[in-house]
Length: 483
Ligand code: GLU
Image (cartoon, rainbow, N blue to C red; front, top):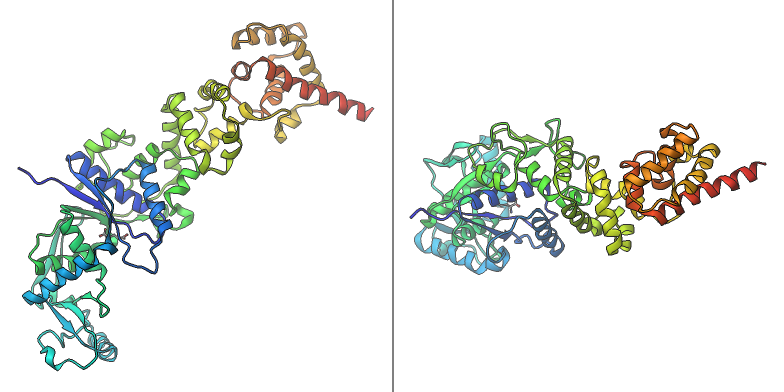
């Protein structure tokens, strides 16, 4: 039987789930999914100063939003400190580790000397073979790995290829601090081993850690997992990613109105490719994803591409699903409060009717919420500057005439209102556009909207006549004031 694939996502809860972390989680999730394996979640909360519950919540929430589910219970690294110490006890017993009593002054001197001699191995091994009986009184030792002095340490990385380090350049790293707390390097190895992790897929900022971790695996007599170190994400100009480039938490992307499906599709293509395919359903990415197709050079973040993918996914959703996405995002976007406060079954029906005319133009859910405002705006509706400019005294008179022309229309359908508006225009020898534009401005407060007769049908008779009267009525006030 082949071994079950077990991957893990191991975030440090010192901040939100950023875009690089989300991509790492996605890759781990996809790799496990495709192989009938498991993805585990380990919260690396050993840095007690910087880890916060708010960050943990943000990470779990971000993963849930992206649809990246993990198997089993979340493992909290800090809670496993006793087990980490136990592994060190095992190493001490077998001679794979030793107590080091070097003072800070001695360590500083070693560092200076190594620097002067151009060596990267800083620790000179003074306590490697020394008898504990000679230890200075009252000093609590750290425990160091008794790393090999010669030979090499290598990994066959699934992305980077074979990576080799000369052992003479690697220090005897600290496994337990003098206060007995485990170091990060030790904790990762013990946890990955105990959790049965077979594949470690993570950012290539951890590549040099892999050498250290490999040495710990070997000392403990454990098999190291397969490693895949993914190049980091850079900004569009190739420089280090900054906030301006999109180095934000995934919650920020939700608040900007991106769909999880679009995010997943965007993220999967950041550094991974499958021929020249750009659009991947979740099932397609699960079956196509593999490690060798991850590129070795950093991916570049491209907002325009994310936007166009998002527009694609918005267009593709049916109205019911799209409305569900809109409703889901309302608490997370600044523009959502008004609509959230008004959502009744009747308004939902109107939105469903309006969405086909809106969704082709929207890049984000926030665009959609804004463009659908005419559906949920209260009378008298606010006009934008262009709409105001369009509603001249002349245009407002046309609106007054339209109220009379539309009042008898029954049933109130797009076709029936169109027929009434057309004959109104013909009777007065006005171009249809000269009627439709003020009509649009009065009904939507804007100069662009879905097809105007669809707008009429969506809003319903009473609301349309009311909005027209609101604007036609203002015309009277304005001309009186001028007179
Ligand atoms: N906790 C580490 C980080 O957030 C990841 C460690 C690992 O994947 O091995 O960068």
